[in-house]
Length: 431
Figure 1 (cartoon, one colour):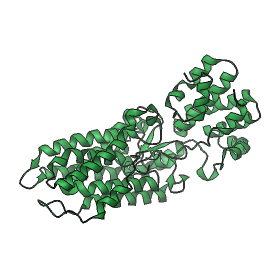
Figure 2 (cartoon, rainbow, N blue to C red; figure 1 turned 60 degrees about the horizontal axis):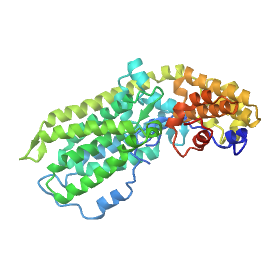
Figure 3 (cartoon, rainbow, N blue to C red; figure 1 turned 30 degrees about the vertical axis):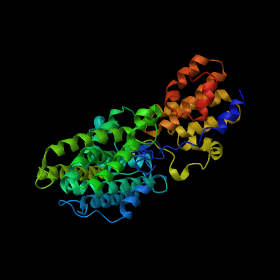
C-alpha cells in the first residue's frame, strides 16, 4: 500500500453531508437532490442554459403570427411566482437547515417531499402533489425557474394557458412515478424539474403545430438541448441514480409530458390554431392545484407527528466544520446524538487516526446499525463511505472475500473519480 491505512482513512473521506435532492441533492441549478441529514434528491436538470435566455430576449420578439406567437405566458409567470412563494414559506417554516437557504432533509420531509415509504406505508398520497412544488435551495429554485420561463415563453402561447398548466401537472405526476420507481428505501425527492422536463418533451412533440418557422426552430433547439442534459445521464451511468440529481424523475416527467403532448396534438383545432378540450385542461391543472394546497395543509398539520417520531440528529448549526473538528468532538456527539450514524462515523475516524482499527471497525458497524434503525437518517453518500472504509479495514486484516462483499454495492454506485474507490480497486476489493 502506498501509505498507511490509518492515514488514508483520515485524509480521504469528506465530511458527510446528509443533504435529494434535492431529492434533497442539486438538481447544476436546474434540479437538485439534497438535505443536510440525508440526501434529498432535488430534481435538477444539470444543464448549462446561461446563454439561452440571453439569446431568447436579445433580439426583437417575433411578430404575432396566427394569433399566438406574441401571447404573454401568464401561467408560466404565475407558476414562477407560486414556486418562489412556496420556497419563501419553506424557509420560514423549516426548523432546521442543511446549509444557508437549504432546508434539512427532516424539514423537507415534513414540508411534503416525496418518500415512497410515507406515500405507500402511511397513506400520504398528497406528497405526489406537494413534492414537485418544493425546492431544496435557492440555486435549485432559480435554475428551475429559468428553464420554466424559457420553455413557457415558447410553449404556453402555442398550446394556451389551460393546456400549459395541465401539461405541467401531468408531467409533475410523471416525475413522481419516476422517483418512486427507483425503489430506493432512503430516497427523499423534491423539485419541479420533473414537471419541467415534461414540458420540454411536450414542446418537442407540439412543435410541428407552430406556424412561425423561426420560432419553432428555436423552441426545438432549446427544448431538445436541455432535455438531453436532463435525462441522458440516467442511461449513461449507474452512479447517476445514486447522486444528488433525481434523473429518474426527469425521465418520468419527460415520458408523461411527451405522451400528453402527443395526445394534445390530436385534439388540435386548425381554425383556432389551439388544442381543443380547454375546459378539461383547466380541470386537470386546477385539480392539481387544489390537491397540492390540501397536501400542504396536511403537511403542516402533520409535521408535529413527524418531528416527534424522528430520531434526534445533529442539527446543521452544530455540525463540525471539518473532519478534524468532527473527530475531536466525536465522543460528545455520540453522547448527545447516538442515533445519528454520522456520530459513529466521526468516532470511527478518530479511532482510525489512533491506528486502533478494531475500535474503528466497531464504530463503523454501529453507524450501519444506526442507518438500519433510522433509514431516513442516512444518505447514499454517507452509506457508501461507511461501507468502503469498513471494507478497507477488513481487507487490511486479510479477509479479501469479506471486504469484497462489504464494498460490492458501494463499488458499483460510486463515481469513478472517487479516490476511495480507486484504492479499493488497487487492493482488488472492487473488482
